[in-house]
Image (cartoon, rainbow, N blue to C red):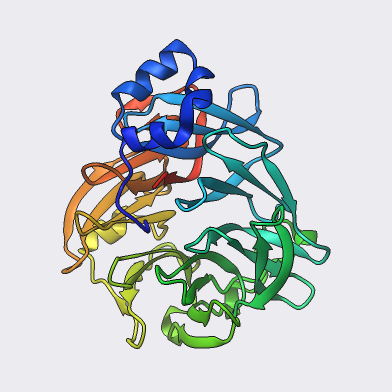
Length: 359
């Protein structure tokens, strides 16, 4: 996360009287007792999709309808706007004001592109960057959208890789930080992975103003089937990344690592039992800057893992069946699941892959 964690009082102050007046008595009561607010995509039992705003104990305080399933979310503390991206190979994104002070804006990807499920705002909230697939050329791009002009698409930068997935922006706005998973896909084939035998995973720093390549960390041939998928950053600028393995199920390659600008990337040597428990699949990663922790969630392994951000040592491991999203909480991390659990609560919905703390 980019700033100090917002508390409930800060959220209420930013949301305003109109937002509070629109809440049900039950939701208002839950918000009054909350320490923090999160957002997550969900699917309801009747098959409809939406975004839920939740307290840290899992009480839903507001819902926003969506046309289809989403994947990742981004949030701008500077503007109070959030964005939800369609699940790959989706062609829509929804930008919404978490305070309900403006109508949602629907963004459509241009012809020849689809969203890869992730994006991030510039620190001042004036630009939205989105990971996209130029499926004709077979490589990733970063779409640029003007948040001051109805989120009009104003251009794109190369992602300097294929299978572009998660991306973020450095705190100072200088770098785009890009996880290129290395997997080629094409919407004509849905979510089919077309190049498993010759994947090209990489992690990229590019210039946020020009898109020019600054650094590219390519995984060695022995790890070419380790897809670099998700990332988050420390206040120091260190980047933590998490991976999903596309090779034989019995292999146990490293799945999490870190690097800083000007450094080589380093994989964390997790205990064998922890790596085995992650089932070769880390679905989400989050950094708790205040506590100096890194959190991992694995739906395939049904676990969440907490690491010390300095030593990389395992602090905690917990069973979370169908674990989905993870985000920094007041103490450690909040974890959601496809089964409808969020922290200590259960809702009659299926939460989606990622959650974001509104900070």
